[in-house]
Image (tube, rainbow, N blue to C red):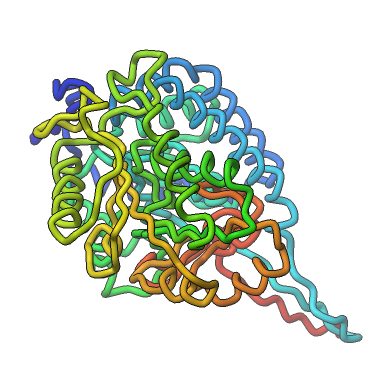
Length: 461
């Protein structure tokens, strides 16, 4: 039987090792999930909510242990990892409270002599494939609505954060969830495709790379099932001349470098009105230099390593290509002694004199680097913001809400922020356009993704 290892980016040692599941395991888990789902769907929504609330409480009860585990698995500073557990609770309970209105039947205009309504039924067995960068927050988006809707869920989590899957399973067991309503599998890419292709899988939800999304589509090409794909991003910000400069800088620096830039909706490119460009750059660089890069287990460190050496080397290559092409780096890497080639540790990098011919401005970086360009008008900013293969979020920094509303209709993206960034509101649909993928999670619309509708059309005689 094959095994896998999780290498901690803190010191590149083996943090966790376990056996990979086999195709026999896949068959067993699917068989049990299919049977368990039929009974789970019969429970009332209130009964399901009781199990889910207990599960949430079980996770939160171990938040300090979980936060440290997140740091050890993927490198985020431990001072920040605790907020992921808090965010998990907030998001999970929001969806829990949204379930009643989201799952209730829809009644069209009444016609005498008829009983007519549209009900929502569970899909059946759902496969959830989640990434390492926000291992709880990315998985909870679909997990909670899927279970509340009456589905069973099989979680294939990233092998970079395998303990998250294990902690989920243990928490569900302590919460008393019926056996096999939720289960986990540790799988390589080949066996993941086998799982998804199985006829017993009724829905797939994946968060990851564009290449991964294409692989998911290919795995299910012989059947017609719902498939949610949250893929890449190259999220832009536009700072207008009337923006609150200090506020904008503070939030955009954080949006660029939090989690070492490893956020699907992190800021990767910024366009600044020429009237305030110089002041913006000065303040942005000054604040960036205040970051402390180092061992993420240290309480005073606010910038940890990237997830692995190959990831940091990819970003280093983007930076070098940009500089070779005429860009200028405004933050001396020597200010961050921990930043060294051949390691996952990479200093925060601010690039100017960039353009859209450079990969750092058109290809997802997923690291602590941001390119900043000067613009002369709203029209130029919008053109540049839309000049991307991706469309997850975009942000406008301004005091003029009417202008922000006007511009928001012109931006090709799933979410438009004004005066904030890098945030998921569980009351709003999380979605994207272009190569960012398809489908919706969160909000009442998220429940529609994990259910199918059935029309009830009764004639009364």
